[in-house]
Every structure is written in C-alpha cells, then in structure tokens.
Length: 416
Image 1 (cartoon, rainbow, N blue to C red):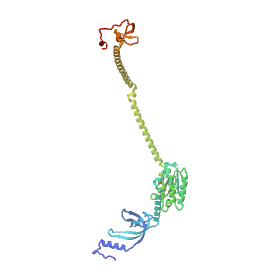
Image 2 (image 1 turned 180 degrees about the vertical axis):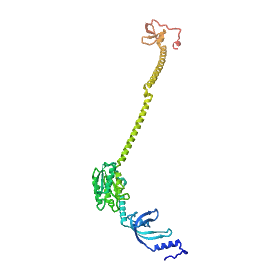
Image 3 (image 1 turned 120 degrees about the vertical axis):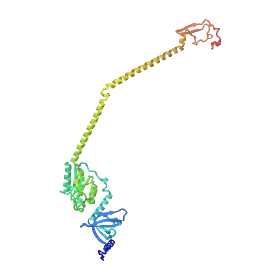
C-alpha cells in the first residue's frame, strides 16, 4: 500500500526505510546474470562481498554469499568471470543500501572458460611445470634465433625488425604455424620441436599479436605447455599484450609483454653495448694510467733515496765502521795476548821454582843406587856400592868407599 504523506504530515526516515525493505522483501529470489568485478574475502568473516556488473550497461550491484558457498565453487570464482546467480534482494535499512544475497552461483560463457583455465593452471603448477628453478637462462648474444609465428604477421615483423635494430647481425630461423584456431596448438608444437632439434638455434620465440581470450586459448593448451617444458632450448613467450596471460607465459623461460618487448630480451642494444665498451675502455685506460703514474712516482722516490742516489756513501760509512771494528778487535786481541803471555811467564816461573832441577842448580844432588832407588839416608848405602849422583847438568857415577853417619843428627831429626 502507498503511504499517505503530506507537507504537514511527513513520514519519518525510518518509516520510509522500513517500507522499502518490505517492498524489496516481497520480490523474492531471482536469477541474475552478470560479471563479477570485485571479490573481497575478509579474514575471519563468514560472508564474502562481491560486486556484480551488467555486461551491457554501466550498472552494478553488491552481492554477498556465505563463505562456505564461495569456497565450494570448483573451479574457484575469479574476477571477470561471467556468472548466473540465484539470489534474494535484501535492503539494509540502517545503511540505506540494497544487495543480492546469493544462494547459488553458476559460471557461464567466458567465466566458465576462465574457470577452466584457472583449474588447469593449478593442476600444472602442482606438477611443478611453472617452478622458477626450471627456468633456463637466455644466451647473452644468440647467433641464431628461432621464431614461431604466423606467416606475414605483424608479430613476426615486430620481433625481427626490433631485434635487428638492436643488433644488426642477428639471424632468424622461422617456423610458421597457425596462431589461432583448432590447429594452432598442434602446429605450434611441431614448429617448436623442429627448432629445438636445430643445434644452431640458441633461443626460441613464440610470438603473436593480441586477441580475445578465445583467440589465445591455443596458448593455454596442456599439450603445448608440456612441450615447452620439455624443450632443451630456452623459450620466450611473446603472446598478446600486457594484460594477456595465457599459460604459455608461465611455463616459458622468459615472458615478454609484447613481440616488440621480446626483442629486448633476445639481443642487447648495440648502441648501449658500444657505449658500455667505450666506458669500460676509458675506465681501464684511466686505471692503467693511474697505476703507471703511481708506480713511476714510487720508483722516483726510490731512486731519490741516498742508497740509490749515491751507493758509495753507504759503503764509505760501512767501510769506516769495519775499520774501527778491525782496529778495536786488534787492540782487544793484543791486550788479551799480552795478558795471556804474562800469565804464561808467571806460571812458568812458578813451575821452575817448584822443579827439582831448579833445586839441583842451587848445588843440591840426588843420589841413587844401582837399582834406581833414591838414597834418603846413609843407612841405605854401604862401602863399595855403585851410586849415581844426579846434578843439574848431568850425572856422576861413583863408588862408595865408606859411610859416615852424622852423629849430631838423631833419628827424630831424620824422620821429622
């Protein structure tokens, strides 16, 4: 029923909001088709918030669904997917906003296609085909580049001309294949295999221009993805434009945003390389000059030292030192020899003083019997004994005629 209001009897906001909520509630559940543009999954919240846009008009409406419903979708719902939802309109009087509470979500058309591609991406990623550790490095300057593209295509022209502008000496081995349609994946796989068998090809580029998601489907073909993963030659993917992301971009060793961008990955810029070489040459020349100048300065400083400027000055000083040391050693040696000579003279004098021969020189003699025994007493000799008398300068042989003891000496005097 319509509300009865007038300027003198207006309805409060709460009444209007409540009436709108009742009118929307009478609409019941409806089937709605559109495209999901925003998906927000907040941690710890059991509701997923989305935005559904009309594909033909600039109209959008908020959509909510239970988290369990959203997580049960297989393949997962992604932004940009076209869907049909069974939802009940709901008006939130407190905020004055309306949303659709989804009870069922079904992907259709392009949304279903994107969902299948997402599911395939997850399966291949789980096998490790997209692992960064498997990526092969590109050669710095390939002598020959393999190119898989459509004959006479703009992609071929962009790759070849851009590469030759950067490095005029680069050569290409082109293997043509369909870049669209049902035969595209098979022909690209065959072309890729031919180039991979060619030992002169150091890197392979798969290139085509932009297109719709349907046009780029061959480059998400599972057989093609596995063929690229099994090549021994590095592969560069140059499919479509920057927003396009076929699965070939994930398995390729390098992804180029456009065919022109692929040339930047294939060969270096000859102008930039020449500048780099010139800079390196100048830098090396400067360093060598600095090194030579530094070593020349060090050599000049060495030559300026007295030892090298006049080597004889050090020899003269050392010669004086040697002369002084020699004279000093001579003096010390003479002094020590003189002291040693004095010691020898003194020792000799002492030895002579203690020698029996010296006693004999003073007039004493040693008397021995014929058997060599020294006579210490007259009692040991008798008349007629042959005696030898030892003097300082020789011996006297004598025979005793008589023995006369000294009566003045007692036995105590004789024996001390």
